Image (cartoon, rainbow, N blue to C red; front, top):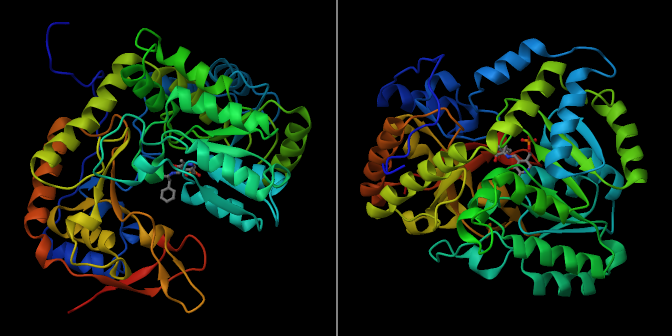
Length: 460
Ligand code: P71
């Protein structure tokens, strides 16, 4: 088409009103929430960018699938449709439904993990790391160097560092590495894609040492579209063909369907290894449910199957990637430091540069998150030392690699004027950045503390 405006490739059939609040109200609400946006009521949020997970708007065909769902305990026809679609994309032999991504992780790592085992990834997301560490194993992030520098623009900042991976295998011993993961796109590192070449070479390296490669496929379609846009030789391939090639290098897949399957709940574990699949299915029956529903209703399986077809539509992916990029471009133009280039599902503000007067021990990302809510009712999430910080033996904080604030964009939910509003609010907060204060933690849980931690603003 000769027109340059990329439109939302859908019409809106059903709408959900949002409630407006003023700053005074938000000051009370945020205080009551312990300055942790996870604790806010969503009704008190104007534009909710906490996560792109489970927040998609479903299509009329997905809602039709909800009515079609076969709720048989065993052998549901919805399962077989789900299995066929997942298999057509991943080509995996065994398709095991789970209620969400972390359930797939829990099952997989309960079986292959345990003390003395090591799991490399480009960057583990928090639930993956938690499920690995919960078994007594250790999780390692082997992201390539360029991916660690928010200000450097590169096409595939999610790539695995292959030299480090080989050194890691030699150091830990291949026999102690039950599998290697690669997360597409790299959520903890800015929603940055991984190139086909990098996936292929990671597989080659793993094969050399007899280590299976698993893909954490939450945002596989967005990754496939970046490959189409940026990697030579893929410009004329369809997103489906690209996704199929990505998965052809994998021995297994974990997926939270709450992202690129455009649903509100669901996930799966897919594998080729027959013996491992038997063990996983046995555990699934204990923890999730029978093998043809895995903690989901038949209708959920229908919605996942339909969503997986829709997410690979090129008009959808073009709109999706472009709308996130639009937000990123405008913020860059306003001087706001973000991870460049914009990622697939979110914009990540570089909190270190945004509020360089707040040290990691005072959680700069949390400070920005709170101010975004107070200023404009926007809910974002800290991805920095609140989420990934650890303590040393003396109880001193070991900060995260980066201090980020993620603005995750739910799929098919907000329009361009919502995005223009975001740009105004964030720009305003940026202008006031020197007035922002640090925070201290006054309560935290021993694991995944960011969900329930309570904070207090520092008054210096
Ligand atoms: C996201 C989430 C959901 C989330 C999790 C923790 C805190 C806040 C929000 C979930 C992922 C993910 C990757 C790469 C596995 C999971 C777990 N992401 N891998 O980004 O991004 O999936 O939520 O379905 O269990 O907001 P699950």
